[in-house]
Image 1 (spheres, helix red, strand yellow):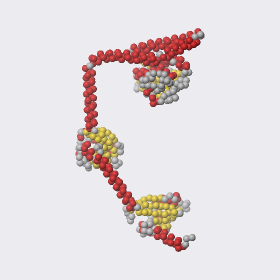
Image 2 (tube, rainbow, N blue to C red):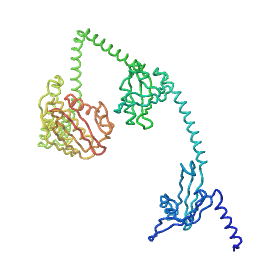
Image 3 (tube, rainbow, N blue to C red):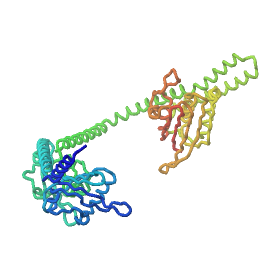
Image 4 (spheres, rainbow, N blue to C red):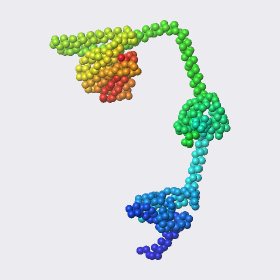
Amino acid sequence: MISNNTTTKNETLMALAFNAPNSRMIVYEPVRNENGEIVDFTFVLISKATVDFFGGKDFTGKTITQALPDGNTMIADMARVIETGITHSWTRFYEVGQHEGNWFEVTDTRSGNYLVRVWDNITKRKLADEVLENQLAEQAEKKYLTLFNSIDLGFCIIEMIYDEKGKAYDYRFIEYNPAFEKQTGLTDAKGKTIKTLNPKHEQHWFDMYGRIAQTGEALYFEQEAVLINGWYEVSAFSVANDGKTVAVIFNDITLRKTAEKELNAFNTKLENEVKDRTSSLKEVNEILGQKIDELAKSNKELESFNYIASHDLQEPLRKIQTFLTLIKQRGKDEATVIGYMDKINTSAERMSALISDVLTYSKLSIEKHFVPIDLNIIIDNVLSDYELVISEKNAVVKKGILPIINAVPPQMHQLFSNLISNALKYSSNAPIIEIKSEIKTVKDLQIAEIIVADNGIGFDDQYSDQIFKLFQRLHGKSEYSGTGIGLSICKKITEQHNGNISAKSEIGKGTTFTVQLPV
């Protein structure tokens, strides 16, 4: 049990602490309206230091709105402390009056049903912080100046000057580093305008820097400064966001530009010398050219013959070999033998016709033997070649109506034979092959677009260009047969017809080839 003497002593100590010279403290009691909302606060207790702070005025018993004309701006924040119990702190600077130039940190805390406000003069701390900030800024500035003065790149800060219509017509140098003078040859430029130093300075510099200052858009460019006889690599950007100040970093690239100019002149001279030499050797070149053309033509015909013969003749020959084997196995049935012999004869005739076409192709210039051909007949012939494979694999071929185009027939047969062969070969289930076409107009030129799509194993689409390269294979020979030239032949044929071929694929979901050929 606490004695009355002890209680009195504690109250005396608390009163002394409350009224200590440096104890700025107020106890408020909230004032509520009939709806229980806090609309004001009453001064319940005010420390002596607080009374002194208010210039000797004691507001005990008065409300904030009565005592302080602008005090109602604080009521909402104070009410929030009472309602939520969350302490609220802020700082305030007095610019005028009794406490001019002083900073105070104010803290409102809920205590029971009352709000206790305590504030401390933190001016010394603020001033110490400012001193520290200034010291750090000075250190940063020293580092900046060291870098600024040591780099080999020219650097300057300029202030744009505009006429009454807002057009830039000059600029003033605010600051620059030693490399600036070395690279430009301009000395004692600080505070001076460029027109003072160089009255004929080109207008395009003002236009560029003015645009950077006003838009805030950084710009990198290479520009010749004619008046100082040099080329510069320039990076410029706006600073200060005042529409006037621009920082410019530049480097003299005159030597590089001179070397480039000399190199271009040398290349031009070399080209002219080559032209002169070519002209002087014209007669010799004509003779050699004839021989080279003849040799190239022979090689090209032989190459085409080898490609087509080795790839397209396989299927007719395979059918003949297969039916001969079947005759040996089932030769007792005369009707069956006759049927097989008919199929052998058909394949042999087709092979003979194909050989004849290939031989004809190998002897003739491609450019001179474009003829109108019906692609429906070409596709039917190809499907006839692969009849046995189609049957063995239970393949389904869906063919739409195809156009008539101007092309070389053997090459068209080769092209679609390769594509259909791939569709049959690279499949894990019963192949489904769809062939369709559409006529499109591109730059007033009619183009036949033929689609050959399958449901085969597909491939990663990132290889859609690689597959057309000569001898490029995406699968090992142990997995699938082939030489790796089939699709390169397709690409070569389409290019010779002023067309193109492309592929889209996805692993496990098949491949779609798109062939575009002029009609």
